[in-house]
Image 1: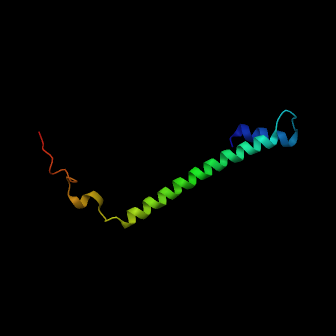
Image 2 (image 1 turned 30 degrees about the horizontal axis):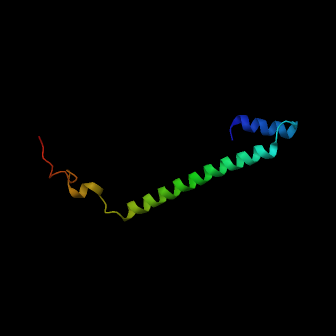
Image 3 (image 1 turned 60 degrees about the vertical axis):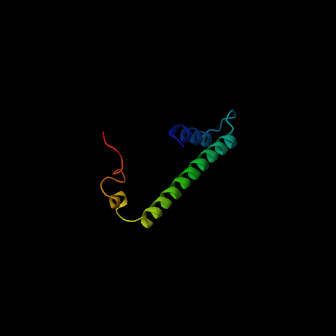
Amino acid sequence: MNIADITLFLGQLTAPRADLDMEAFLSSKIAEVSLKIAASQRFLNMLKATKSALEKAPHGGLEEKGHGAGNENRTRN
């Protein structure tokens, strides 16, 4: 929620407006936050999987293949 949403929400609590459907407003915000949480969870899972894969990989990465990183067979002009 941003400042405008919080202001609207607090204003509705202190002086309810008949033209504002608070239930719809809250349902919309709950859906919005739920989507952000789900996206954050997917990102967290990706980070954990990446960390796990890096822990299992040989140390040194591309350096183990030499400084050319497999490019030694390319023709240079």
